[in-house]
Length: 87
Image (tube, rainbow, N blue to C red; front, side, top):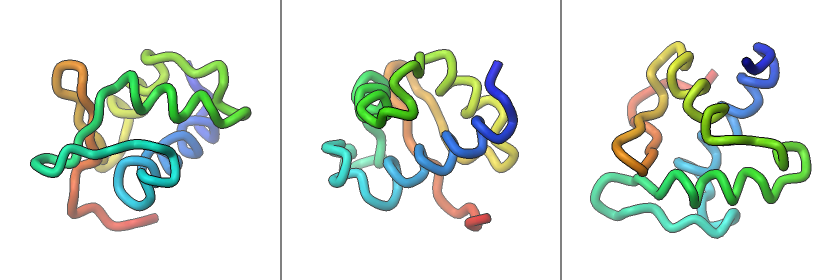
């Protein structure tokens, strides 16, 4: 299990990757639904030294525990859901 502050920090980074600046991390979002492959997200996260240890389960935990249902996993794809406020 991730510590609460680690989870929050990871959630913010995932939002950045999936909504704000995916191109900075080499991620190409599907133009239809804004999703990317889970593997692609994981690889981008793991390139950040701080997150090199990250596993798929950790990302799934953030998705599950997200207070505002910020993310959605469908099959092997993940996306940021829209319409949430930043905070």
